[in-house]
Length: 188
Image 1 (cartoon, rainbow, N blue to C red):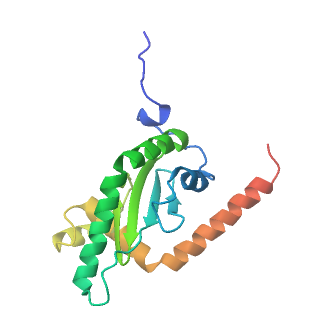
Image 2 (cartoon, helix red, strand yellow):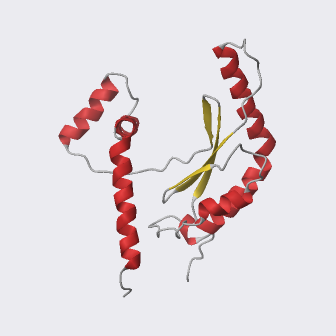
Image 3 (cartoon, rainbow, N blue to C red):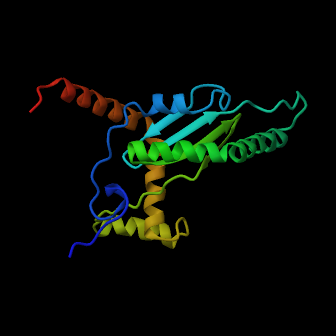
């Protein structure tokens, strides 16, 4: 007797097939997002697990005498207001995106110097570490920088990401060029 599995293949667990290409996702999002939500075209970042959409909101008009604390509070209020006012529509767009591209969708907003991401996806990752690498993680845990090895590993990845942006950017550009060359090559 065959056991039925419910839901799309990518959500059933086990080994996961690569999601479909999302080359046109940014354009699709621009078409789906109402024109009055953001000052300009939202930033769209895509990886194999998640599509992140972050838009810039109009800054609140506080006047020239506003303190930095007042500006930060007003910007946070604007982001919170946007999040609540657009919740249902964002959920609808996210459901369509998830169905079309088989990736989770996260939203965010930037207002002045304040930014916030909503419901981001945290993907579990697994790696094998030898003793010297495990000792690094254990030192971070023992020092109170992280509560666990997994949190310490995430901390290390964030640190490398902050300090290697230009190198990682160059690497991503090079990988994009390789992908373009592959597309231009003969098909098998």
